[in-house]
Image (cartoon, rainbow, N blue to C red; front, side, top):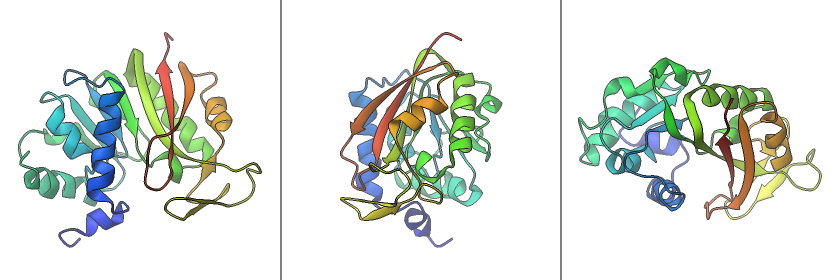
Length: 211
């Protein structure tokens, strides 16, 4: 992977989307003392901001791509002046959302542009696994592309011009679909709508209820 190829691999807009993530989470009450799980953290586009903001040891990331994780740890964190601030064992290579392997409990979960690439069964699995590690009273935020009036038809999202589908990547969903996938899990779902994402992704919030 060339020096900055990893940035293109996660969709570019490196500075814009990275800053958007930390800005949104801080507006939602994220504190430096919170422990955060970044699902689909990739090469740390949002992670570099979060590692710098959170107290040392409070950031954890999980992703299925070893090259992206390596680029985040070995290129992006040193570039941001954060070399040594994130223990390497706080990044987990895993394609099944098994954050329980960290042995930690989280105040906040975060999944930027993850549900947009997942089938409904995989979203269900993600919600179930994250519910195991987010404390009661904690929150999980996940972005999604919103379906049109007929969920079976492709949708072109503006700005950005991304075309989404019901049956192939990138996927779109109704909020009611996400709510149904979480229905018998210890989550209370709410639709936050738009959050100024440059490619028109929307935001869902899941509040962790007592099991």
